[in-house]
Image (cartoon, rainbow, N blue to C red; front, side):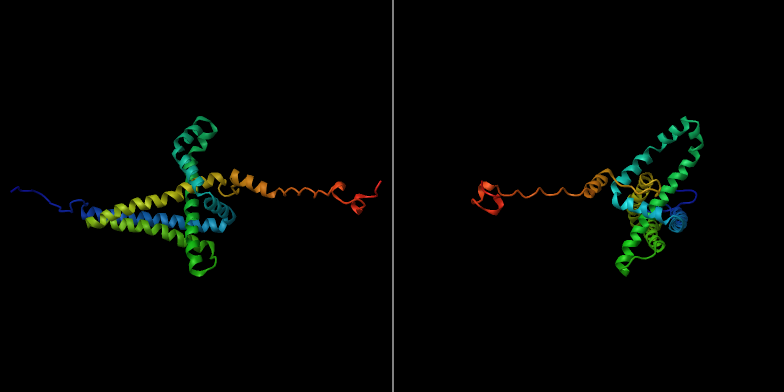
Length: 239
């Protein structure tokens, strides 16, 4: 029996207003397009200008995925502490403004490397041979960004069920995208941004042990003269 004055907007019980959902979806798609363009440009530059460094960077992520992600998480959490330590020193004050760019460089390297691995696995199963590195990176990056497009479309839907699936897809996309970011930062530190191949201490010790030749077997012990019959040639002249 109540009377409502003014404009009334009817929405789903757990959803957002339709106009707001549409704007969220549109803004999300533009953001995804911007990041996709950034990663594609970075992939072209890395594959063209620094292929050797990119290969060493990728091999570090392949051989030590957990270590790369753990080191990346440690340095990502410790970014404020690192910035404070740089600010304390007079020379470090000049470095602090470039610190976000260094992290961005590492993150793009990680995303491009993981995208290249995904594209390589897909193309090798499809064509059975290794394809150009740039094509591998483009295919892998497209697969990584498709999940975010799905998130934007689902969360921009006016249907509450689709919106719920969008929230679930958002959580999955964050978890999947966290590994390239963390592994990129970690691998950048371990390989000096791809300029040095990283070998763990365990693998280094194993390689050194494999390089050492095996000891020669002991000489075969000859039978003593007491075990041979008298007058045998091996016993020498009899006294």
